[in-house]
Length: 100
Image (cartoon, rainbow, N blue to C red; front, top):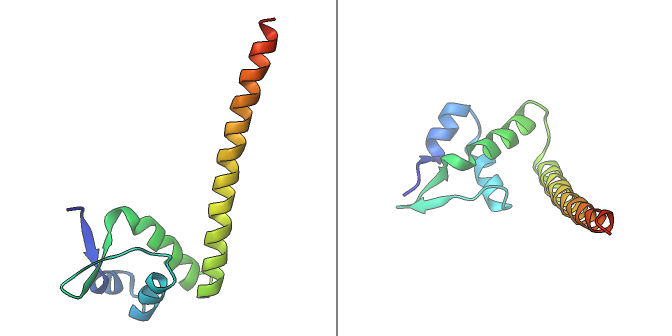
């Protein structure tokens, strides 16, 4: 079993509303494990949780804004990956023509 922390512990540690945590889960921004009706966040997902918490409480970004930002960042990462793949293919093609 992976290491995890309960929703209640996170709420105490980060001093956030429990409803904010639940809303992140409800809209799919966080994935949790549930055991005996207790929600747990995996430690590996803590950086994502912290990012959303900082954006919401420090920058006052609402939940729809968090969804939009998260979606845009995911698309940027996909584009970066596609760009790397295309650059690698271009490099391979360029190397083939240099050998001729």
